[in-house]
Image (cartoon, rainbow, N blue to C red; front, side):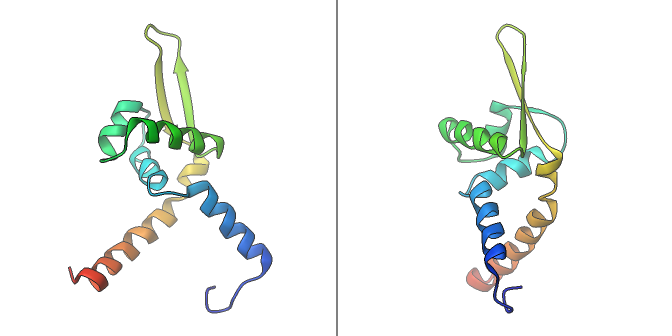
Amino acid sequence: MLAKGGCPKTMLSISDALQALEGKWKLLILFALSDGGPKRFKEIARIVHGITDKTLSKELKSLEANKLVKREVYDTFPPAVEYTITPHGLSLEKVLDELHYWGLSHRKEVIGK
């Protein structure tokens, strides 16, 4: 696709995808949720090393707005909140796989490892 150039619709769809997944954290959060089962906020924070609670909260809200993550609040005391990846979020599996392989290749190219 890159060698062929692109039409305005292609540019728009890429722009939409980048907007939904912008930043360094969203794909890592989706990856953390992709192994199945709901996870609580602190569980996600432990898996995604280096993310602050404030950033995680902001990114989860954005992922929820883009229908990539579902937030479930349980009527308990204190209230329990769990996050799960949606089928729409799981549709990014091939993208994550390709990023993984490209990242390995890139690391080898740049760092030599």
